[in-house]
Amino acid sequence: MSRIATVRAPNPSPMTLTGTNTYVIDAGGGEALVVDPGPVIERHLDAIETNARERGLRITTIAVTHGHPDHAPAAAPLRARTGATVWVHPHSDVTHDRTFALDANWRVSELSLRVIDAPGHTFEHVALYEPGERALLTGDVILGEGTVVIAPPGGAMRPYQRTLARLRDEFPEATTIYGGHGPRIDDARAKILDYIEHRRIRESELLATLARGPMTIPQIVIAIYGTARPQLWPAMARQMLAYLIALSEEGAVTAHTLDRPMTEQENTILNPAWETIVGAEHAPLIAAELGAMLKLDTLYEYTLAVSSRKDARLVDP
Image 1: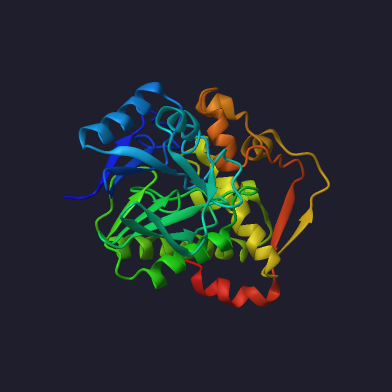
Image 2: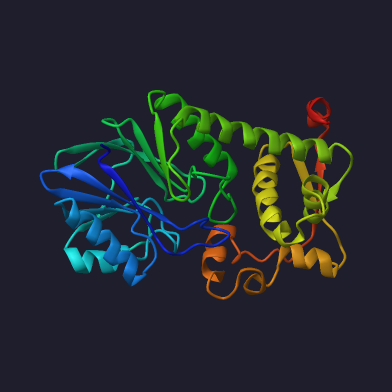
């Protein structure tokens, strides 16, 4: 029987899937470690405590993988209820007691875990590896279904890709992934490779699209994703921005300002009224996940650098 139990928060949404996964882990010696206590919902806090109590455990430690509002806020009230110690990434703004030593072993009672510095989705993200069950607890680095949003200014594409590569290279023995949302993954390596390949394919599509000529982000979004789901264009635009920032920094793409006002459609894609898309309840999460606090007031046109055109044609369908 696994020492890792899932208690799913009742906060389903387009960004959280069926809800945020909180993990209550038997650390031995009658102690429990809670990973990602989630949002402040009283019945969720009750459920976390009930899970531990019914297993004969006392919650002594809380670990937060990252500070997004669907993962971290319940750490403070759970700490107040239990007296547990809250641990976070050294760069985290979440209220805490202790900070992790990154890329080091971490002991909770009889349980030893590896703390992995895992930037990309955010810059203050950690993942945990539990060797006894060969289990990775990945927060929002890898989800049980779908893919992860990587959006500036809180996230960045190349650090995220390096994090995925680390999980592939440094934890080949991992068999199970417990993600921040969605079901448990029972073939860890296959999922990690799928995530790496997804990012490669999407970047190839972007380069192939730019090989046809200069484009703005709204034009890129429609060219790659099509017109079937316009409500998702703003999220897609933020994802494309993450790729374009990386490619621009590497000299593969250049950008120049278009000296004209945005059209209504362009502004809707780049700076939507997020509340009208997801509702006021979920708007703070959207702001965190998609970098909605970053206003894209200037319209840029992106051009593939000459040195990148040959490679882009090779992947052009």
